Length: 254
Image (cartoon, rainbow, N blue to C red):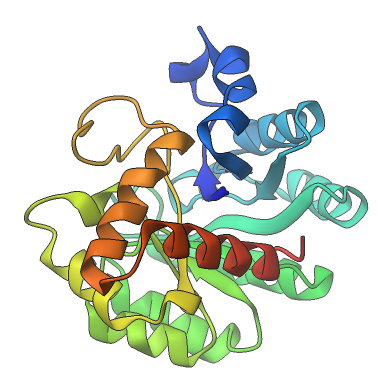
C-alpha cells in the first residue's frame, strides 16, 4: 500500500474535512502516513494525530524558517516525547532554507546540528528540508550526519547530488514535482537513483501532482507520483508502491 513519508494534516486547509478524509485513506490504497512537525504547534499536532489514528506516525522537528520560535524548554519536550512515544518515528523536518532567509543562517545551522544530535541520541532517522542551500546542507550532513539514517525531503537539487546522498546511505524523497512537465532534474533523479533508495511523499496540502497541480494535495494522490516513476524506470506502478513502502518501513523501523 501507499506509504506517505511526509504530510502535514495539521494544516488549516484540512480543518473542514480532516477526519473524513483520513478515515477514507485505507479505502484509497494508503497504508501509512508520517505527519511531520515543522513548528512547535505542528509538532504537538503531529503527536495528537498519531494518537488518534493507528496508521499515522509523527516526526518531530523545527523547520529552519521556524527556529526562532524554539527554546530549550520545547527542545526538552521534543526529546521526552520522542523518547517515550512509540508513534514518534523521526526527527524532522529539520535543515536549512536560504530561499526566504527568515532566520539567520548561523541560527539555522545551530538548530540543524542540535536536532541531528537529538536524532543520534534517540537512534531515530532525520527528515531533511533543504532549499537554496545545497552545498551547506551536504557539507553539514557529510560532516555530522554520516552515521544517521535519513531522507532528503522533497529533493530539488541535481541528480548528481542525489547520488552523493545515496552514497552516504540516505533516501531521496520524491513527490508531486516529478510529475510536472518541465521538472527535468526530478525526473533525472528518479531515473538514476535505485528504487530501493526512493521514498514517496506528498508534503500535503502542498505540491499536488499533475493533473491536480495548484489544488490541495492528499496522500491518495501519491499514485500519480508512483505512476510517473514507474514510467521513467519502465517498471510497474505496483512495484514502485511496494518497494517504496518497504523502504519506508525499514527507515522508520515499523
